Length: 252
Image (cartoon, rainbow, N blue to C red):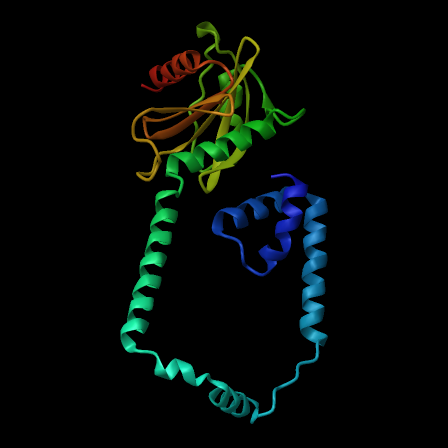
């Protein structure tokens, strides 16, 4: 995530209001961004100063008793005359409406595949900005693979597919599915392919290959040899499937 996306989240991050994925994204960005780290330190200092020097006033002991007494006196008497049958009918209707609303929300929830695909698209779009495509520039798999040593808690398989028409351009670190992953970058004529790799842990979204099209881009997910793969590119679906097949063959 970029600075302009992180800054609005800092206050919620300090108040521990972010979910685990957003909090991890903020922490990862702040670790590598001096400006955002300084901004967060300033916010922490302000918060600590307010907490230390702010004045707190305790409400009078009888305030709660007085409020409860006033509420009791102001309660409309007409509610007492309502028949219980109508009250129960109203409650039943409200419960049915609430259940229907919850069911709609549940059915409209994105699947695990959808969430990963959306994160992959966002990451791929960011990588296409100048200077963000790769952290290590090399077409040599024996240069790219060792570069990840010490940066990840797994060793990603790296293959150069130049002979098959998909030369390796390099790799970078990225964040996906709640963890750091390897992002390998390949090229097919004028098309860029980002291949995200991380260990398959039994909870990965796709046990078998799945392909979707979104916003003019093709995405594929699959598992092979204990790793989960996600490929994204603006080339056509057939070429991306061919690329995925070459990666699967090299992983065997």
